[in-house]
Length: 338
Length: 291
Image (cartoon, rainbow over all chains, first blue to last red; front, side, top):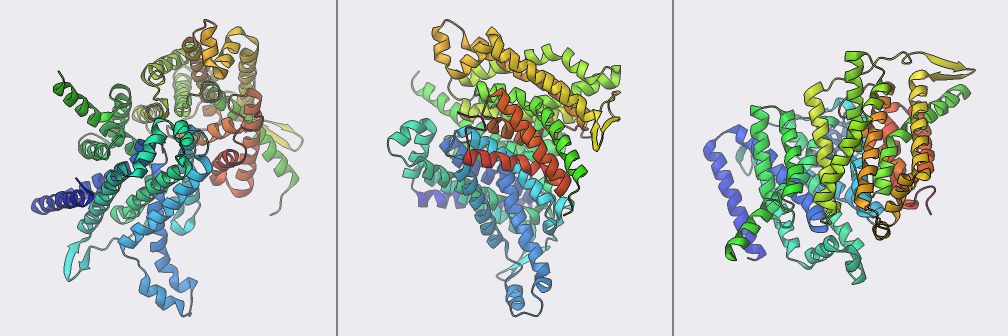
């Protein structure tokens, strides 16, 4: 199956999901669906570095929050244009540009988080793998400190983003939550297509050599540092993109919710439970775990549902190291050769 | 900014006291990460568990938190040995420690934190003891006993660990396993058993560190996260597994954090350790006393 065919099928599946949502006509479906799609992007992004290269990123929440807060900063910038540039000729130009549409914010969030990923990688990836993991863990704490002390984006009080009720699009009025849902759906398709393309390309084979034996790869002339930097940048960028529309979705963003450990643990647990070796794993993991959490949050409590995620993560890494995809593959292999 | 001498002096003394405590917090990671090469990021979660045990017994039976922590040492040792056994069988033996082993510890951290939230809630908890409150005055310097006692206990524990590692047969065996596991195997010693003992000891230190933590500050389940950055920053700066290096690094971090908190505000303090970590990794990955 080539890339074009895959994209067509992915878009087709996306359209079916949309049709199903329209047929249901429930706003809640879009709310819940958005969260699951967001996890698909996060899990896929994590897997580009974690699953393909074998480097663990504990700072998904930090990259996600960077995307979210870059949106908040740009949103707030719109309100201060007149105070920052009084009676100058720049102000009308800026007013024409701002407020930026969300697709632009997504690109911007991706750039910010991508740069952060590159910087982190450059500083720590030349050393042992565990240093990178530890540094990403600490990154979340520090960025949270910075945001808490940064009054422009609301500091520890948080920031309100008034979401418009609906948006005009080529003469058609669309509910805003539907708009966000569609954007996230497109982003999820792009993330999955990218992950799949990497898997089948020279880049993906390079990543696999790093995962299997970095020393041997280095000795055989694989430019490991460059490949690792590509992976961290891509992975960080997708996480930032997933975070950029988040303030508009939630309406009120505070550091504790943007930097929540939930994102870090979910973006690790989902690929681990689904299976890390292919793009299907994170997809399966995030759909299953994401839906499970949506149900558990409503029926039990949010603390219990996080406990379930933690226990599932530990159970899967011990019992089924290759995730659900690995279990299915093993089952097929056994049936073929009895 | 107007920096007065007594403010500066007090900040430095407070930093040294804090640093002594940090040394106790890091001791366990120094053994597990520094010597055994096990990236136990769940260590701070075990410390918080120690804090809550000290809190629970202290509130219900009125026993001093430090005494409690010493009483539960064997339980923590057993917990550590158990965790290592699972880790060894599931990851180290199969050569999967880098990705799945890390995820395993992350899962443990998460499970511990969420379980504590479910049992105790997210309110801040604190203990009661005679030395919480009064302070000693030496000229310009104020030393709250709430900081001084944990610092002294921490240093005592740290000294005992250092003696254990350098002077006893078992301690030297642990050092040996950190240097060359294969060689140890050839000498007919069982490296897995030694690692299990060492990891047990590393988790046992979390019990004491936890009790000290809840004496110094009120504790809620997610406080442990702040310590992940600190603990690993100290461990890396100290040169991975070097006990004297760890102590020096802990004191430096304590003083710098205290100065930052005094002159820029306490909300900036958590950023210090991360800066330390990145600078160390970028310029001197072998640590202060590294070879």
